[in-house]
Image (cartoon, rainbow, N blue to C red; front, side, top):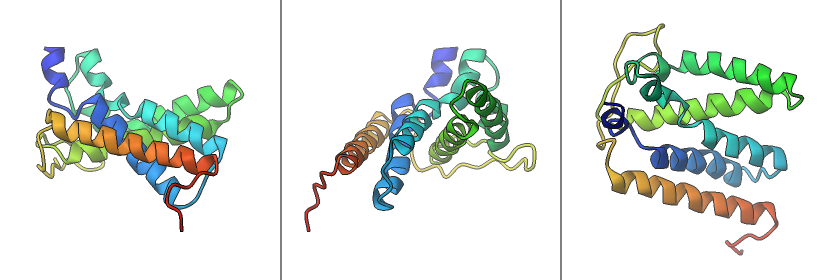
Length: 164
């Protein structure tokens, strides 16, 4: 049953790629390079599949774990763990919030509706642009996100492949 549910959601490759694409794309375009931004981006990508923990927990998929408010609560908890470990609250909180947001954004494009603003709103949303198990779409996000990440790394070390 868990494996079946996994295929109803955008897969890990898709979520990872979307997170890399959005985060490092924005940072590249804003010309923002630092070790802190790099770590936050990598942690964001790591946390981007966190909402799908419902599959492993065997609870309703795209239920409570697919609400931005759950992401906020988890972000606060992880932020405090990071704070007490000496890494700083924001190093835990920001990547969880971003990863959660990017995950929910990716799931919005699929056919299965969910309530991203629960409990504030009970409206089910889905843009129905592609099937969540579409391997081509998921791999395209992974390739695009990985490419932007490499472009960001080149920029960070001072090599701009887009010469004037």
